[in-house]
Picture 1 (cartoon, rainbow, N blue to C red):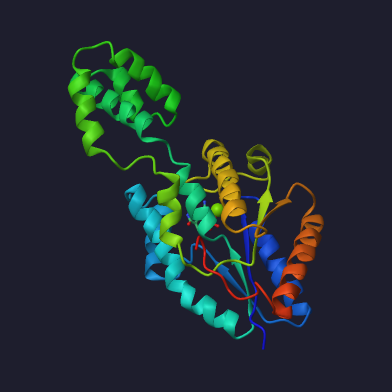
Picture 2 (cartoon, protein in one colour):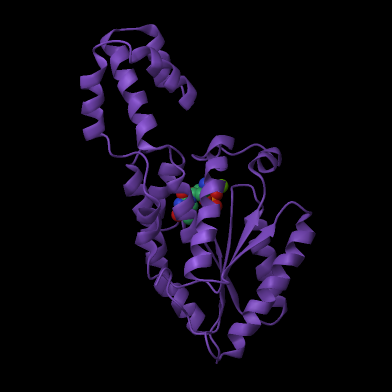
Length: 280
Ligand code: NYM
Ligand code: MG
């Protein structure tokens, strides 16, 4: 019996991924195949519950720690995915390691945040009302504006050096981001649903979750482009962009055409049809 195919759908929040995943599974089943969805993060496990609480801002975690939890959440499901594939079931993942890389790598770089923190510290030291505004300001612009004022005072340098050495939680290297998922089952194809962050944000209000802002989604989109480049270099032919700008039916048809071709190739067996390992 041929193994099942591993299919991944990726995209920004509100790109229509989950809808397309459901429709794809319906197509697979209607074509007589066994198919199963795996959504990441899988919030049902105990690791998934920690992730859920982080996404809902009920807990704070170091950027590395949450990154590793997302990867661990995939690893704890990897054996089941492989088992399903071996049994001939097609597995469709709603997000995978690529979201892991893009969302973490998109986090604000260390420098900016450290400047902001230092400015904040300084403002507290001076008990300055303007500085307190920085603590509530979410935009880097405000932080930078306050910093340009703050740097004119002599108290800043020692504060900066303190933070430069103690705060290592912001800004994570791209290569670091992809490492923890090395060796996971390699998707036979990943379809990246492209939608400009502006259009996505107009599709309906973002939810309450972390990362659901236009600013973050724009940075995530840039990182996804780098992920696509990495895939082209390391696993050519396994990353495809599919425009998600059309109607749901139009997107559904494009997704099904592409997936059908991949599923048939895997079913045919032969060279290159065995399950690969991500980044290996
Ligand atoms: N997310 C998802 C990550 O930051 N890293 C990951 O590894 C994965 C799989 O979680 N904004 C982010 C992307 C989403 C959020 O996903 C929750 P969803 O599909 O909205 O439930
Ligand atoms: Mg979401």
